[in-house]
Length: 351
Image (cartoon, rainbow, N blue to C red; front, side):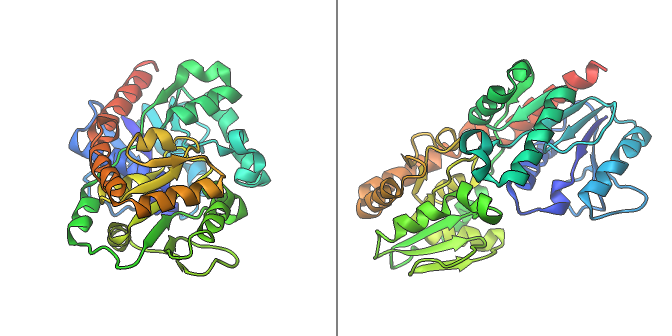
């Protein structure tokens, strides 16, 4: 039996790790792996798919407490291989496959996420390399970062892009009315000062000061003051976010580093042109369907935004190219789930 640690769906269901896991589960729901699959969660899950779910006798909301209980639960359920959708996995003799989503400190140093968080991720990565049968990454950029730190792990690193379903965003675009003004949307602000630096909020604010005729909505929490004509919406549900993105003239994603990057794909599915950076995996994700500028360069970001906002033909071309890009087979939920399922099967067979 394949065991899947579903903790991200419980502890932070809005973050990218949980979204990536939901994409895998959707693929497995459409095409189940040959070996039976069970989700292991801290407490009962409310899911749109009919998976078996195992929970501990005493449910918990603590990821750390659940990780301590998980080995016993895995043995009791007869698990043959464990898939952990993030680096934190329990100490168990069951062969384990983990996903490492990003390693921004390799490119940006401790400023990427803060010293404490970076040190913690380095320790988990060392455990991944030492103890896991295989490591999955969502992009070649993350693979290169990982191999730079641990060249000995190269043969066990597998690039499987995250799944993306464009359908909800396409539906939102059909009902959306473009804003009458120049509306720019940015999605994702990171956690704390390190996360904000990684997401490039300082670069975005600097760029927006050069664009006095633009109204910007930032979705996420922002610490400190924001420039004029910037509206902050701390949280939106998926439907409201899709409507907002579909009504915008531009989505800007100024991150200095990303292991994958969902917001550009969401905007492209909605027909909204994208300006982003060459930070990490972003060029892999957007291909030639978005305008890519140098990460950390506020002047280049402002120039790129102005270019797309001023040139309707260019904006239309990016909108059309985006519709094609989101249909790339690399992002297909079934294809990715099939590849990961085959990897888990091979690992389970080697027990």
